[in-house]
Length: 92
Image 1: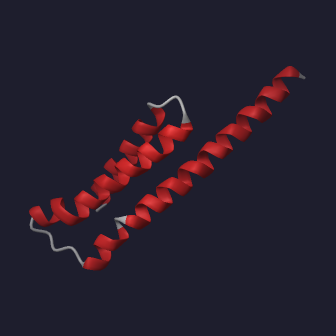
Image 2: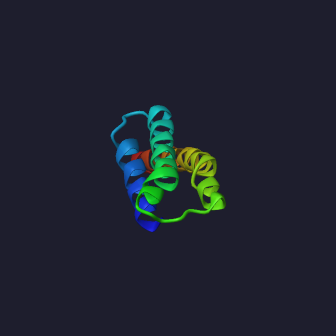
């Protein structure tokens, strides 16, 4: 799954950074990463003849959406706080 996770993370970063607004970028990137990992676990690996346990498929579906959304929200909040902090320190 490691190559699929790498692609999923790259997809997340690319989609998030392509949006001007984090309110659109976070959900868009999270949903697309979720879709990519779900398709990878359910279909692509099986199509390559790799047996995937049901527990692995479960781990790479809904939990990935939830963690991608939470991580994006936390990341966007940290970015906003840092921008506010540094914009105040530049004025001093």
